[in-house]
Image (cartoon, rainbow, N blue to C red):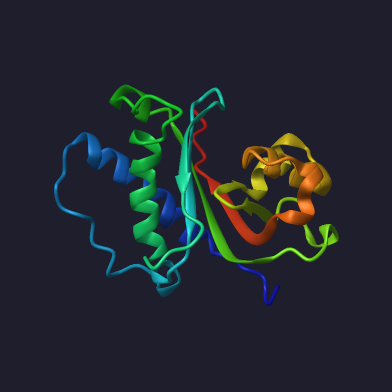
Length: 188
């Protein structure tokens, strides 16, 4: 990778606020899109992201994002917060009563590049994408940390998420990407 991908604490806070306000405005039925003209240039860059919603008891409540984009990071966070809340097919749409205790996380992704060697994978920094024909799966860097996986297990689990047998890894396209993940601090 070139230079490390970073966001300032202020930029992280702004993105988390955008995600929460996006959900709040969905319940208030706001029809106007938020103005992002005062956002720092970093947040106006076309960067992909995922928005993750967790319950207060640390259960997944929704997670949706993109791997590539032609839209600004701040717009993506706004959009994917709503998609994670209302359009993740694994869950019923979020109810307004769930919003208060909900913990929002954002994962900003750097560009994907082909994985040349498993030794390149840095747990907690890199996410993985595996594809073959019409099958594809992605796991964010934070998943490997949460599950306490090593690089080999991380790659195997990404294959399985794609519906692919890890034994045939040589046939698949495997990409790695840098990731910066952060969550709200919703302590009582």
